[in-house]
Length: 197
Image (cartoon, rainbow, N blue to C red; front, top):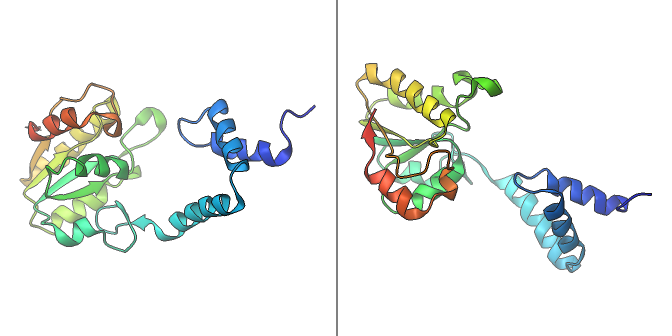
């Protein structure tokens, strides 16, 4: 006997594909959708499709944008570039109102155990930006886990011979914590107390 009828089972299956969503949470999400009005469900579905259609990556930094170039790249000096793993890390730093430079999103970190090497993330884009000139400092703000540290050291090794100042956010953030989960005080302190690699 099936536990769920096909439409509910399919909805639960789709929700369970989201990161951090287990079977019970997926089931609660599915029941919530089923109990929505047609207008609410339609609005929810439209928001998903609209985001998929309109959100793209900035061709300069790799952050989310509705246009080819994001507002940060359009309106800020590119003398200081803050390198992060994912677009959600940009949001975490922007909430601080401490950083006035631009970003570079790697879309991952080096992780040999997972088969992710330097060519699999956006390091070439960073080097291209630096070769264009005008960059004085690169702040490595990758997570403080093993992969984030390895990525920071690898990029530092590439940039130091180019005469670029490379700094690392200070470890006011507990080891192994993703930036999006760090409290704002710790993240702000880590950012202000960054150090040269």
